[in-house]
Image (cartoon, rainbow, N blue to C red):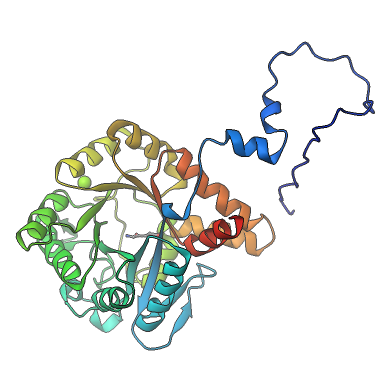
Amino acid sequence: MAIKFGRPIEMRDTPRPKPALAASPLDLTIRPRRNRKAEWARRLVRENVLTTDDLIWPLFVVDGHNQRTAITSMPGVDRLSVDQAVRDAERAAKLNIPCLALFPYTEASLRDEHGSEAVNPDNLVCKSVRAIKKEFPDLGVLCDVALDPFTSHGHDGLIEDGRILNDETVAVLVRQALVQAEAGCDIIAPSDMMDGRVGAIREALDAAGFLDVQIMAYAAKYASAFYGPFRDAIGSAKTLTGDKRTYQMDSANSDEALREVELDIAEGADMVMVKPGMPYLDIVRRVKDAFAMPTFVYQVSGEYAMIAAAAGNGWIDGERAMMESLVAFKRAGADGILTYFAPQAAEKLRNQG
Ligand SMILES: NCC(=O)CCC(=O)O
Ligand SMILES: [Mg+2]
């Protein structure tokens, strides 16, 4: 069955004609509907506004030239060769989207147990950063720090005897962050959930003179089924062995998110993030209220896929669901949103004037 929003019926400002249905008026002094009577009135009392300034657009990059390959589980999102990523950067700049986030699809032959390609200064992410910053120096570029796009086992860290090694992983992440900063990345975003990585990365960035490179910590990142399509996009869906529950958070927890965020702030995070988005709006609100930090939220691939798939089937109005989901993040307290809808949302906002 098609679920659509009806077109709003606006009341006229002129006196009503005789009502068709007779009823004695209720004795109501307060009628909340008055403030909703017309679009101008709704605009006047609106509490939260989404703007293009709130958007970070994640892109997937792949080796090759002049390539845009569709990602089946993310309708409308492509993997891009570096030259095409630069074209999307141009689109972002034209739309005034402040920042891009880059994720690589690493060739199978370059993946190994240690994620060595992550620290290669010429890997796809570093190449893309250089190419984008060269043409669009004023566009922000965020790079994810974690090993999952580079490991043969699909985990974010190094493994020994089936265990994820925290401190050894942090040492590699520090090197990964440094090659990204050297390539020109503006925001380093550790998404690995190892303990102590923010502090270690901050110290190394400062020691190398990258005093202005920001850190956006994926501070409260939950072990989530909603990452499925992302793993298709970066090619780790088939290789991932087991799950990530020894490092990503348990979806039943909320106080723990505050402790995680507090640690990352103490270690030097400039901005914090909650991920996924829509199932965790309560966490966004708690984090914003508790720390008053720049707080971001990631509307992840599965959230995107649900809306895109339902819209593609004609089951919901995709554009309205997109805008409703994005303003919900603002209402929950987010200062910004990483979303695959960024270009469509920015276009819609521009056309609205
Ligand atoms: N570190 C980045 C992600 O894991 C993104 C997940 C998603 O979009 O599903
Ligand atoms: Mg942590």
